[in-house]
Length: 513
Image 1: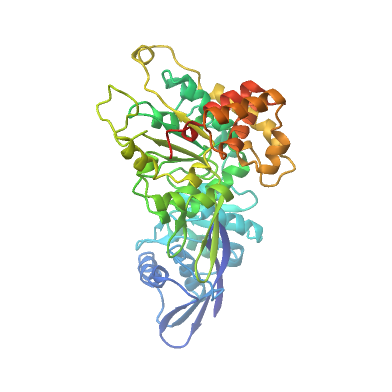
Image 2: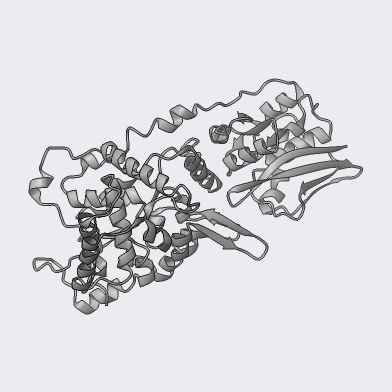
């Protein structure tokens, strides 16, 4: 008897339906074909124990199990339940009261028949709906995530016995439903980290607001204890709320990486990733034998925070240059290529010198000019070229630290940021790959960042006197455009230009040779 059951494989952030064919023949043996990896080959031991502990068995017959398409590599233990159901129906141990062909069935089996969570539930659910399947049966831990997709019945189960009873005795499974409105807006009004808790640092808060409004990459330079990390952690709280489309994109990536079960379903708040400086280039951009998304993809639609930037290996930082420009990363292997989206805001922090202090006569540690140059040279010009805003962070004086008054709340700042982003969305409506000011190319800069004669003269004078590099010119115009948007001004004026010039600290003479 030949039986077909359907599962799914995930490549990149897209799923492909896998047909598991189970054929029973005369003889003895268990033959699994169709390019399975070791985890799938070992599944017969898990399946045998799970079935035996629930009153069923793998009979002593010749079983041929084919995973089609046969030339596509399959990996992971999520096919245990698919294979087990195929064996039970093919060997006549259970009736098929509900047609197997109408369902995608996925899950890893424990020896007692309980199910363990799988990866990629959301992309699988999206593909199942697209291909017209009636339902998706999977472990309960992943059900909330899969149920985000409308138009397909999602059943979260704890044990294989529930699935067997559904097909054998028509005992209904509990359908999982998600209230998208409640899930999506629950976290918006109560951010974990709020700018209201920050004492002083008004100029840095303003800088963060500009960065958030235009999607600009930013680097904070300051001595230890000045609040760089604390400020960076609060940046996601002032970014505009994620749209449903952004939320689904982000959830898909985290689902593929197996990180959604801890969050319980859809990603409603923008991700904040802060990898340690010992990270490898593969862990940062993604890769491996079976390519997985790296930190830059997990930060998609959110913030990637690199604390102590010069401490990262230079090679690791250099591999970020192309994703920063293209906003996606392509990982190529001999037989296949996967592309992960990586549109993130880069926030970096660094001490101004190896000792942590710069031009401070009272500093406990002093660094020589040669040591400073060696320290700063770890950051390449091309990488720095992709960072729009450089700002120096100074320690907060005691008077402000002891001030009992709360600062401006993140929700209030976010309102201004959202208004500026709306202006940019309308401006770039006809541009496919440009959504906010930081993404502008030369063409858009020339069109939307026109200066009057006085502003042009101010910019020229500043570049000559402060010895700003040529790469600073476009960056200043982009930031000035964002400052103008925050004020709902159509034209860029001298005030916008002069403020934008302040945010190019590392381009000034004396920092980099």
